[in-house]
Image 1 (cartoon, rainbow, N blue to C red):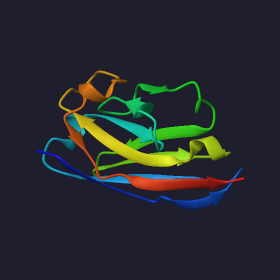
Image 2: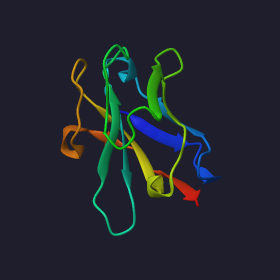
Image 3: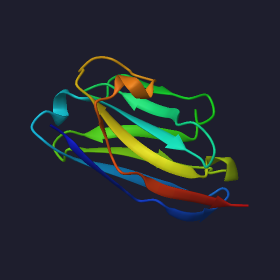
Image 4: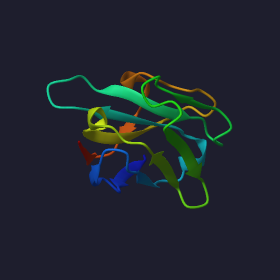
Length: 125
């Protein structure tokens, strides 16, 4: 069992930066592939970024490539999402997710086994 708690969301002006953190509890974190998703009002949850168990492989949605960076610290049971050059269209609730798979990069919500409660990111123009 893995429990996930996101933090670091908030209100930022366009062009600004935020770093989201996702703290995980549970013995299997270092064996979990991890991902970040987001959901804006009235829209479906969409993939943002993902990485495998050691962070050696990462993948990003085209909409955030070059602006966002996903990383993890297995010693701290934490995964991060560094978000730079934020745009108003990045406004959403951001969720982290964990999968009971070690090597895969997973880009669909149904591929994940555990979810956090989400953290709001609002980018003003």
